[in-house]
Image 1: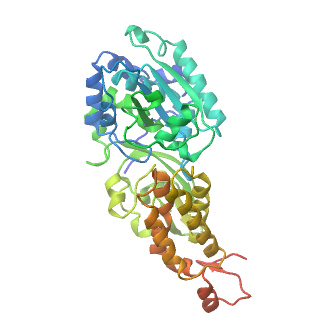
Image 2: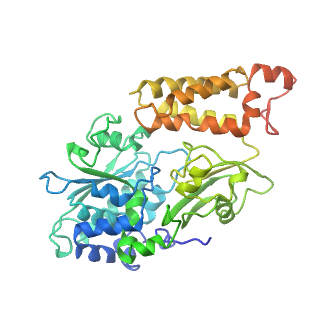
Image 3: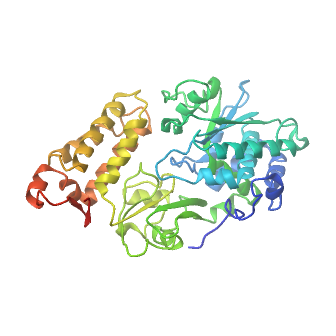
Length: 434
């Protein structure tokens, strides 16, 4: 399957983030077309395109917009979730750096569609260069008449605010993000009510991922049928994949959904020289890992579901035989334990217990029964936590145990006594820890 650059097509141009650079390549053509349409017709086009949320959940975008009540005499808001915090994920940050005006045009069209006059971009605070770039791009759009009062003489007003977060993973959850945006501690809210009814400042709010909103201008410009001509029936469209890890040329690749991991690894220059693939994760650390046998499975929502995992953020991480699975999973759980907001018991207590048991296995001091205890802990957390962070923490271990049980057994007292010389270094998959 060939690459299909859309959002990344002009990254080689030094002014790609400016209005002038964007206008050279059909920039703001879609906005002019949208402002001549009825707002409900825009939502219809986005629905027809089949665009699904690119932040991991995959919820239909047009349907989400349609939930915003009209004629309710309340202000409406758009909040762009740019708090890219998932371990291994790196697509929204480079998109904002190089394709800033794509995001702004998509935001204007979205706000016009569900009648919002204020929008926010919530960016994690650890990337000040991205915050500065987006602030510059927004100022450029104001100066050129694309933001502010009476945009392009349409009578539509819109203001965009760039907001810096404080670096909490939990703020990637949309309601925790809204609490943070309102100045409170970022913790998930009880739902319902959902943000479309009572979101920011208790008013109707749409929360979308950066890539989701950026995809809108091309859909409006070219039509929903054009967008559906890419990808698969259940996963239409183009996706930005960021391939990281043990490949020769890690980077960003934009391709139709349904491309395989084998093809992406080929575009990334193959597994690093002299090594072979051990396992890979399709969408950040919070989805179950896969192995070489799954390389030809389509990278689509339904394709990944068919092999027991999720597409997630579509930011694959690739690991070769030098990687200890136990050490990788332990590192991820260290992160989830640290980032738990502590609001609900399953996540607050469960991540702590999983992390302790995994660390003992990683250090070779675990017990064989710990393997089953960990399975039980994950089952108790999955689906029972207040938000998806608990589910994310409960996901990596069961899949890792399924494919690499011997490595976890090697971290127990029993396995150490039977399999290893006590004076020799512990070895994981042929790689010495000494």
